[in-house]
Amino acid sequence: MSTKTISVVRDLLATNKQAAAAIRQELRSRGILCVNLLSSPGSGKTTLLESLSGRFKDRYRMAVIEGDIETERDAERIRAKGIPAWQITTGGACHLEAKMVGKVLGEVPAAIDFLFIENVGNLVCPASYDLGEEIRCVLLSSPEGDDKPAKYPQAFLSADCLILTKSDLFPHLPFDPAKAAAEALAIKPGLRVFTVSALRGEGMDALAAYFVEALARLRSAGA
Ligand SMILES: Nc1nc2c(ncn2[C@@H]2O[C@H](COP(=O)(O)OP(=O)(O)OP(=O)(O)O)[C@@H](O)[C@H]2O)c(=O)[nH]1
Ligand SMILES: [Mg+2]
Ligand SMILES: [Zn+2]
Image (cartoon, rainbow, N blue to C red; front, side):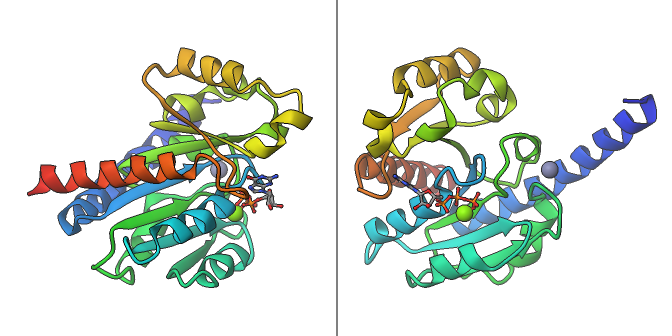
């Protein structure tokens, strides 16, 4: 990359940081916990949100911002669960940026507990874009292989939480969850690790409890 390219990228990221800081401040003042979900395409982000919606039903209010290159499909899946959802279609861009989230923020009801943002399926550049979230979760599904953390380190380094998904497939695949977790923890010590099957519901209670605890912390810090 030339010096000029590097400085343009740096300016873009600085502008994104400012927009993200404004979103974070706004959401904290509203007492809303924002979670950004990152992963390769098809790791199970939308299925995880569908499963969480069932767990939170009647106890917590959630809303979802969906990021995809094309189609309303993921937002439609979430709406089918009775959850408000906004679809951002990037028209080619392979990550969400804070300014895209900022545009829909005004429509998000004030009286919610959780705002989940499902990023565009991509384990690379979404890691560089702060969206104003409180918690960043990276998902790694068993069919992808347990060698991914070291190959895509930025996604794991920038995350607070690792969710190993599709645990129901563990018996059928050469995927070692302990190895994947250890490799991710070597990159980011302190990463919280969860193992789930959103399809079967296994591990979902512990993950939901993690978000509920984080919401309580956010609100007690703001009180
Ligand atoms: N066996 C199994 N399959 C799952 C699980 N979670 C999701 N899937 C399947 O994996 C496929 C992709 O799931 P999605 O939830 O659409 O993945 P995604 O990460 O939202 O995909 P993109 O939005 O396209 O990046 C679907 O066929 C799901 O049914 C799981 O826990 N176990
Ligand atoms: Mg999806
Ligand atoms: Zn991108």
